[in-house]
Image (cartoon, rainbow, N blue to C red; front, side, top):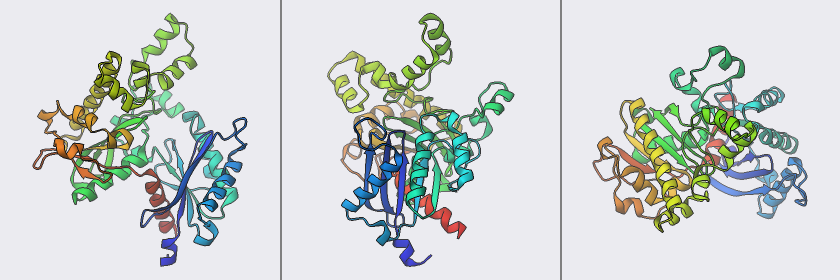
Length: 388
């Protein structure tokens, strides 16, 4: 690949059922040329009838921003695909067979993969460059069988492809490697727990750069308390509510995904507002915060045991990167595990990756901003380089 090629950008697309988030960036330098989101695709009055029209809107917005993809020499399009199922453990160049395989996975991700497919098809019709699918589940394809397997009849799991897949994989992969750069240590030399805390939340246990456990499961519902998702609940909740409250399976599923978590407990799902209300004495918000923090500590302790010892704890994503009070609350009772934060370091405003634990701490605590678009772009060009 020539030096000119290395200056060429990658278009990263994250397509949902009614949205198309995009960013144009140069993977080698992390320079972002433009980005944005086309929203309300297919909705009445939006003027964007489908993803093909959304892609035309993208190119128009890029033109308005002064980005001429024809002139700059677009290198490739990298697509975020939420669910790769049991077979996609690495990025893959998109062709008709890959599209069919992703469509076959729609039952595992009915809310996410259809939108990704629409985005892929629109981009293939618009840009005559390689298209690469990067799967959110791929980082967790390395989970050992004891971590990935549900204790249900094997024939049921095999027939319906049931296992713990994990999500937010591009974020966990990017952040775990960025921690190695921050600390100046080989990735293979330490264990870490990564907490991706946004409206959706997930935890991972990473040993030498390899994921060995994760909080999300077959779907993004399992695990930590989230903005509107419950996280872990007794599976019998479904049967109980179906029989005692006459709720349908669809109603229960909607409740657990969209009306639970912080929103279900405190009435709001913006973590900043929950924290402000809790500090102001709101008892519902206090309970929501306590449940949220308790679940985080639960997973940190469990993963420290799974890893046989913890070297690094990392906070990332919107809440993890920006809420110093949360980080302090999570760590304050974990001193026996070697965890502590330095108040001045923790509270200092910064957008940079940084260590917030005291010097000499048994466990290093870090804050590392995630960059899923950059990770997708890097995986895209790495695959194309290997294929050249």
